[in-house]
Length: 620
Image 1 (spheres, one colour):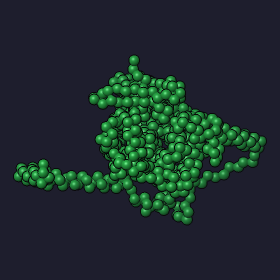
Image 2 (cartoon, rainbow, N blue to C red; image 1 turned 120 degrees about the vertical axis):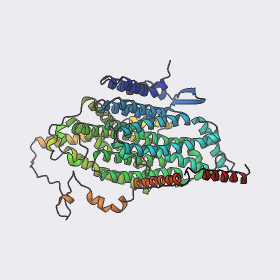
Image 3 (cartoon, rainbow, N blue to C red; image 1 turned 90 degrees about the horizontal axis):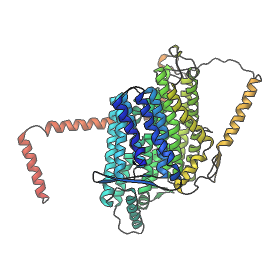
Image 4 (cartoon, helix red, strand yellow; image 1 turned 135 degrees about the vertical axis):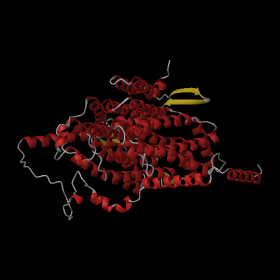
């Protein structure tokens, strides 16, 4: 009998291969949906065993290596993120996929994600990480070669960084197993705490942490390693981007949590704390804060809705990294909570974008407007996503952000707190524009015949929207599951209420008052409140002459003054820096090729003589 963990991991990949091999329209879509639904069904089936505190284990030998897999409560939570958002994204692909190629590589990347979350050794973790990366790279390559190349190069850098870190650990520990690595590093930390000799030096621990920081930072889209994400997210099937942003980025988050689980004690002993926060954690948190700010500002400046939400996704990941970096039980739990929230509302946003692009063929604000009337269901879904991302109750985004705010404040981290609050403010800025420019105002005549979302996309959006509402009204459902990971009531309360000691939040109470307020407003309106039509003027000039060169409307150049104010800082581009480094490296390689590898046998003889002389001097 095939082990259940293997079914969870490989069901999407097998379905993708079958869909690709058959390549029959209608059949491949059914197989793809089944491939995404089977792992989710098994995860739900195994919940009772995981909830009882049992760890489901499986080991196999392949190629001389032992691969361990385990379903713990933590990995179950992350696998459920992949299951729910992955299924919703696959439902969207039923409408938006172009061919069997996309089904193969989209489902391949989903299998890689499951493998990352269920792997219980470093070798398996790395191999499935690469499977996930390859599948997502091929999805981007189908749409944009340049974007895929950028993603590939950054991913290769992250992969080699991870491989070097794993190699350094294996060289000292002699095992890839998470359990053995944890034991060895814990014992090493205990020895270091009493001043005894340790197997890992200070420099080695700094190098391992730095390498993992690069590896996981690339996948999470952490500043300044985020440059691949805007192009990759926008230049692929937008239904798949719901999975790309909502699920694949969480493998980076999961990696940062593993740093705490496997290396945390050793890093704290070696490098100490900054106030009450581990120094290595503060590095993660500070990079997360920069990611919030920079991602949010760049999101506000975009004219393309795909790139707006790509940068927005980067910014929201920053919240998670801040929370994980702070390192308290409350902050890590809040970070995982926001990982769930982000997957739900950002997955929903990209399905909404997929619907807009699919129905209109437009991606820029200047070509949109008035779509709420033509696409009422999609607008309703967008309204849920907007409230959740903005952190407005009673959506799930408010609950997770509130916990992060409280966690940062409780640790007396004013700089991080300022970054987090700035992120919320800038989020309102770009969401207001998206709301009005796309859904309200005057509609272009070429959009008069636009239809609402096709049924598969509508079902995918409805699943994610429903969970945004349910987990917002009953936030304790998520909190109680996260408490089981820590083995204590870090967040108290009921399923309707969160209680962290210094404050409470009741999703149900907020909902009741919201409904009452809406009823009162409706009664006043229908009883004959005085209303009048007002002209809509969506231009503003702030003293500038009204010209097409400086035409500021909600749909065109709306934040041009902000762009001009930040012009100095916007010239500082890590994207350009990386391109310059690549160009310099390429020029240097050409120089070597022309002057060193010149085809002259006499030159090669001199090279050999020099090498032999050096070896002789070293005594070899």
